[in-house]
Image (cartoon, rainbow over all chains, first blue to last red; front, side, top):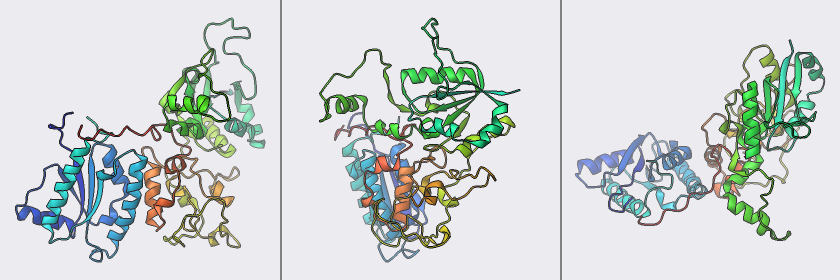
Length: 139
Length: 318
């Protein structure tokens, strides 16, 4: 696959209360961000189990972003803290699966941070594009 | 009419075959209904005749085939295929046959790497070429039996339990099916859970567990005490009582040891490594403290692609 033609596939798990609304704001504000991102709305970043992320990365996705509320803002009080703990485990497992650390990110995006959402997706896409396809890439 | 049983062993240590012998008295009740036609652990049988007068491997036809051990080399593959041809029902006996077992830890490395390490990299032996004369070539990885032939019944365990073998054979004799429940060891475990670890740090297996007086119900969950216990990601069923058929305390828990995962994943397609890392962090333990994660959390289940050499890093900008 050549550098020019390669477009990474990025899965973004966005929590319903902050980040998904943030993504919505990015859209309504007409902000540009790469079309490589597929957003999956979840009720809380704390419900994204590591197996969802590892499954995504080993079954076709090139990068995964989990977006949650800023600390202290979680609608469910401490779901995002749970997500942070799980992110540590995910980063360790990237090693176990032979994947680069840059393929996964945990970001806090509030409902008013449409611009931040767009920026995060922009940098993430560029980063993963530079890495090339996931070694598990299918098809 | 007696049911014909054939047994074979492939890449094994011998523990699961001894489990058959270890059935004890219940075997006496079963024996009139069974006829062992081929069982290398008990009786010698030359595949090609005493002096090699035949050209093809010969295993007598049987109704039930008990195969233990994973498939490591071409000879074992050949035997497995022959067993499948000759047996109406094929049972994978033990964790090696079901999931690759301990030997499948070698699947983390490429064959050449392994040969280099064993024959040339070892400090205590003289360097030598990889032996090849009169030896069956190794497969590229240790395979579970069902990666080579179709398997009808799975009896996991390292070693497996006599009760399970009796139950499976009895079920087959009476025309019933034999299946382990799709639930975790934790579902059968009597220890007390509070959903939060008692301390933040992981303990090594040799440190002493706090075992409360009286029944195990008074004792705190081993994971919550900080010991890596594979209960959450391991299939239940290791503790069946021969008398009642009722399930009891999981075997390792009963012996005050954390579960090591020999019964394999709870359902097909599950990834215990990932699930376990999730479980460790969910109760507030530090995932970084889990040492040698790939091997530890895939100890018995390295076949079926769960352990494989890590993919080569993709070149930047490819």
